[in-house]
Image (tube, rainbow, N blue to C red; front, side, top):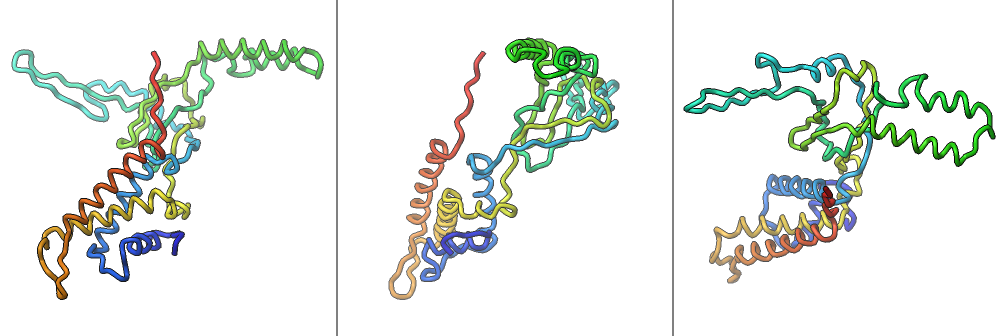
Length: 277
């Protein structure tokens, strides 16, 4: 099938591109399974179509607040690191537990949506925004739209100064979202909205198997593995005078992979954002 919609159909497509069933592709099924996983990993980590932006909602529990507020005194912490010096002795370091466990399908976290705190101008019924609607806009036409827009902009400036974006730290290999915030400001039952990028699971979205980059890249990976398997038979002649040339097959596949990776960086991968400051 020219448009694979499953894992096996993609494998069959790549084998046909390499000559099957006319030629025998000397690659084991276990090796092909590993290559499919490798191709999917590169596709999901670097291809702009391998992830999609989404928002995850998490409900805060008392256990989260207690863990985030822990001071890790007397060695109570997530992990400890000891450094020993021959002159000054041993130094012990402890890491705080101010993090939330993130599902493994999350590739990156942009930010957490700003939530209201005690320092916000828009917290509770006594906030400026609430009083503005209560006293000045109790019926249509009581305030000009320009005045309303200017007041709202001014309140947003105050809100931005008093309740800045929350500082976060995240590493996709760690599956932990560290929140450098005042955990005392959180309440049990409140929600945190996480702006993140989630992996595109091909089991849920079958069009991933038909991606042009994935088909081309996996075909080259199988070709390289085929050549690598045949390298040790270099110079062996088959019936009819045919001689295996695994080295040539391997080198051709490696050049194809290098070209594909270079094209990935220039065409399919999102450029890194500039850091200003």
